[in-house]
Image (cartoon, rainbow, N blue to C red; front, top):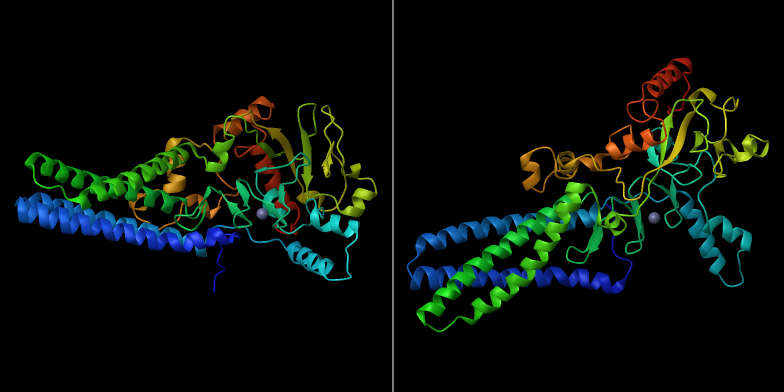
Length: 430
Ligand SMILES: [Zn+2]
């Protein structure tokens, strides 16, 4: 039985249950007006315009079918497969601790609270960490570790955001949509856009056909059908709303953004950990971090004590300032330079055409039919969680790392091949 993800707010859950009934009512009414009043009673029986009525009816039922299919695909995805990040193993311990400390007569010490409430998992073998440093680029914090979600107790992959609405981290989170009753993220965004596109087209057809018939009634001087006016108002409202949603979503697709990205698209600075050849040292421009991070006892025994000193005065756990640290898994280590984008630079923008394909699919059937998920949801690349565009090359050039780092790095590639030959026991890290 798949886990059902719902809003944490009772009011939102109620709205989620009422909205589908409201939508069924609105569509049933539109069908009654367009099929019964406009096409059958007015165009066919009164005006004998059979051809026009048939064209309207065929278009109407095609759009209705596509609208219903994309709606069902969207709501089934947001409920059953919304693309949430699995909860971290430490969450169970934290919940147990919180439950225990709430029991009468039991109080956790401040120290215990700090362990469970704050900060990332400092264990160098923290579960899931290897998913980051086996890639060539990932988004990182100042200390070179990935971002951490203290609610889910898990590492946040690139473009993952925590939703307070469903209290879970979501891949490529976009927004919470009460109309489809859930979180629109990377798994459902394509179906959602198809749904708003077909709904806007459906509303445009109802609006156009009904308004045209109303105009004819006005010029004939016959009594106006009140249902026509009600259907026009309904179609105009939903049509405008879904058209704006479609327009905004298409813009996001073409520029490879989400609603979350758009909130700070002009000022956002991304911090990237970029794989560089082993032996690269920190400079006054950037720090380096080497994975696997030193074990806690190694940190205590002086392996840089987990702190870097560099020209910027930046420091952080696990960052080393030089080479030659003969520590565990030396041959399996991977070094990353910590680099920043310029404000507003979008590392995910891979060009309009590829941006479109990563969300909508590579063939025309995928664009129109709600069957296949977005290609970007597979996370198949070994280079990064999502393909990165020219912004990465620009960042590397600014730091003087072009040619030695990033996805076209020959040196880094050779380094990893040598590691593969030189050490049979890489624990799947390299
Ligand atoms: Zn989270």
